[in-house]
Length: 388
Image (cartoon, rainbow, N blue to C red):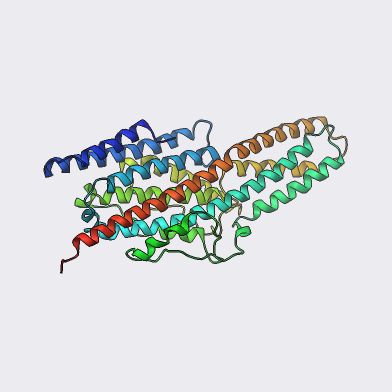
């Protein structure tokens, strides 16, 4: 789901309007209309994500995650336009934004860590793919003999062991240097470190926890009330909620470090129209996570990974009991399973690298947006400072 014509017209509308001189009353009415359109576009995008789960793309499949990240990028572009485009910088330096915007920027920093962990996690999934391809190559040789079965079984055992590495321990070895992430209002020094975020090359510290990161991101995530619900506090809340949801979904789907205790619920008021489809998706993903946790199988909810696990267990059972030349009926079943395994590998081959690239795109986009917001905050602070 690329940036749509609707998004382009929405961004153009804001750009043109805010470069025009209008009365204060008219300006307020147009601000409300912008907020309504932003909410509608968010609702439409998540409705599309929900409806796509009943088609070919299961929730948390590679294809669905790519759609989710595209939706995030579209929402982020519109959010930034609503918050910043053509606006007097002093407006986002006043209450309640003087508190809400720094909190949002703190969530952005935590989201960067999650992007980094997820990008490393995709590498783990690519390793699953390579092992599965060895299994396919062995079983596609005809006739199937003891040598092919031994080769396939070795790869299957390695695959099952790596799938049990449910906390992403392959990425625990090195310490990471933290560039920013301090609580409180951002500073010029924070902004100067933005260059450190040009790549996803850093590894996570040994004590870093994806579950705790998501929990910290969801802290203080409270819907605006009263007069704040029709002001700029609303899009800040909406974008914060979208960011938490997207990062939570990535952690649930892709192997990440320390996911024990991952939240299965974060509060989104059910009366909010724009959030209805998101709430349904959240409930569905949370239910799947609970089921996996009960079985102590938390390699991730990625659809392709779960199918690898199911097929792998069945093929190990076949390998353990195989005696040449094998039963014809069982060999037919295995051929069907190997064909399915091959199809999964093909989807992984086609989708994992683009997914990893999209995670990087999200990473770089939010870095740029954070810098832009910091610049506007800096301008607003200078404008409100008393003259000497």
